[in-house]
Length: 376
Image (cartoon, rainbow, N blue to C red):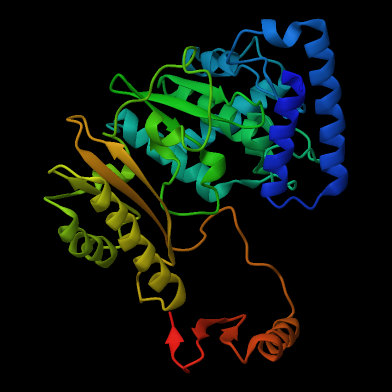
């Protein structure tokens, strides 16, 4: 199998895993991607392409384009060289920064303010996946993102980079090796961090905010020879809310404290050594807690643990980063469904599963075993 076809197969597999239902859109993307990759491979262009930040086509549809002319105009105060569209983009971005940024903010505080605004005010493109083309124009660039608040992954990445450039914070757009997703690298105090706002919209918990390579590599792969290494935890939200604990048996009390204080993200920093059995126990503890959060609930507690990942502190000690989900926020609206439809759907669920589940579309998901006891 040729390299071009292998990459296409990977992209198609990820589309299927994501549960895509937009058949016509996927077919359009597939045909385009396969034709383009096959042509490039046969002409020898695919092998010869060097990694670059801009000018890269994601999913055969969206191009990562430079935003430096707009940020330079902002910093110089001279927008005379910009076209009408870029001048409007500059004005929209400037107005947002005027509302978000105040004197005395650190670069991290500025970055966090922009991240919050984007997570709360933007939404996914109609296609729901970063690779599905739709009729919405400009969802892959700051003009469309800021004007319509609607974006694919390339739109999030280039808009965040534009804001960072305007704030004179070093930032790069990263794309994965399979060319179906993009995100950002941002530099704070000389260290780089991964920021994937597209993956955090509609969520809580900062699961894709200021991550090191060690965690991002679990989600994506990219040209690590071209892009700078991200090797710090200082400005990761979970690390900032960490508890230093001696060992695994101190973890439950630390987790309870994090939940009682409504921490959006939290880190268990083990000051002592951890063996394989202890790391497995830590994962099982989190699984048990997550099961209870999802099935039982607790006032003020997160709805679930969105994700957790192992990382290393600067001294090499193990750290378990935990990202909570307190429910969707920003960029998401509850579906407009007729209450009678909800009641009818609830009754159908109970008719079908009522003999084994205490089930309801409004909540309640306890399982009853053969002995009549609910299992949370």
